Image 1 (cartoon, protein in one colour):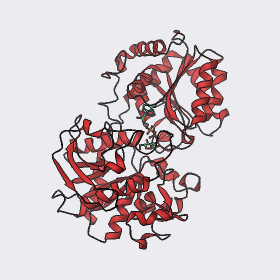
Image 2 (cartoon, helix red, strand yellow):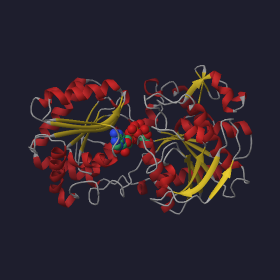
Image 3 (cartoon, helix red, strand yellow):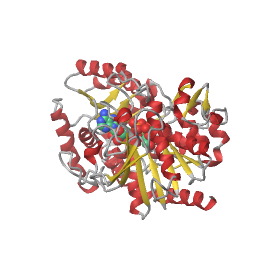
Image 4 (tube, protein in one colour):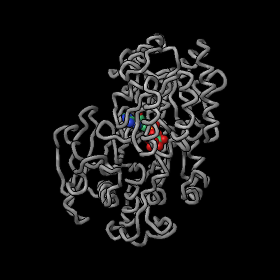
Amino acid sequence: MKILFAASEIYPLIKTGGLADVAGALPLALRNKGHDVKLIMPAYQGILEKVDPILRSINLGNPFGVGDLRILETRIKENNTPIWLLQCQALYERDFGPYVDQNGQDFADNHLRFCALSWAAAKLVVDTSISEWQADILHLNDWQTGFAAAYLASWKLPHPPIVTTVHNLRYNGSFDMHKFADTQISYDLLTMHGMEFYGRFSGLKAGLVYADAITTVSPTYAREILTPEYGDGLDGVLNAMSDKLTGILNGVDYQQWNPAKDEHIAQTYDSNTLDNKNANKQALLQENKLNQDTSQLLFGVVSRLTEQKGLDLVLQALPEFLDTGVKFVLLGSGDKYLEEGFLALEKRYPQQVAIRLGYDEAYSHRLQAGVDVLLIPSRFEPCGLTQLYALKYGTLPLVRQTGGLADTVFEIGNTANGFHFEEANKEALSACMWRAMEAYRQTDKWKQRQLNAMQYDHSWESVTDNWQDLYQSLISKD
Ligand code: ADP
Ligand code: GLC
């Protein structure tokens, strides 16, 4: 099958969260099964250094009046995946993240930046003069590429089936109506049954409404988003389309995340040499100049610091545990009040708490290998990848039972591989952390949980059949 996979971030080119991991690894897994997958993403600043020399450059003209759009055909250096980079200096060549400026504010022209990406993806699947390679499936991801479904609906041209994957419903890519004229999308689509969303227009809603299939990244989240509590205002739309909605759990790229061959960590290990994990704990404590006693439990967090992740509950719960001597390391960045809260905790417990603000891929591996328990108390979690990485590293995840966390972390019975709690409050989190503390004292049982965690196969290879079946069913219907 020929699949065009469109995303706003793709590892190892650029990453702010799990979407990049998925957009890097799922296409690779599909290619390994013999499918012909190409990627499309903006040529953000610095990206050209991470791809092969450009094979072909195609000028798509200046449809948005901000400068010419060019498609650069190349491959990702690290893994040889074919990619079309959308180049437009005015839109993409900027410092800082793919979505926000140095102050963490969304770029004011994000609607244009991602309409242009979506427009180019849509063009590529209908216009043979741009590319002879014609996709059998167009796979969109989140709001940034959801507009592609709107362009295709506007143009009323024959096009391949569209799959839209929701990685996070909270980010609906909605914009003020006065910006709609910039998009070049037909006003016919601006209805309640189209892409209008509470008086605004939404890229994610377009991606849902005009898709042939909607997927999300875990079975539990697929059910949750049909409720007002988790639906973020789109539950009505999703309920109306529930026959085309499925949940397919994300996988893990074990080439990247594997303690047996991880080049970032102090000491490699696997389930037969689990005792070596302790050297990573030691190294992590040393690196952070914390008290070197490894006998006490070490909690960790690797996360975006946003309301979604429930880390305010960790801030409330931690002091009573720190008072018993446990330790805590965090890697993350995001909301100022959380950053400041964690820094204050570090100041209060300098021997036991290490906070690293910012983004650091290598340190995220060292942290996963070094800590005993990874805290993920998310208010909602479409899939969650950090718990899957933790499992592979024999690091027990402690999670709120929601979304993909509920599908992958178990506390009771002979598959127990972590700890979980239900209510999103400090008391429930605290009680769960006490259970983890108690379990840590029972060495044999702890080790059994670690082995359960490490043995479970969450590879992409284990889920590509689901993707193949979905794509095939759409092609057969077409
Ligand atoms: P989300 O996509 O909601 O942020 P996921 O658990 O799906 O959550 O994916 C998060 C990804 O981002 C993981 O690969 C995690 O290791 C990584 N990550 C999060 N914060 C940081 C950080 N500060 N530095 C390095 N990697 C990070
Ligand atoms: C989103 C979600 C996260 C998921 C990731 C990849 O960022 O918040 O739960 O794992 O996308 O699908």
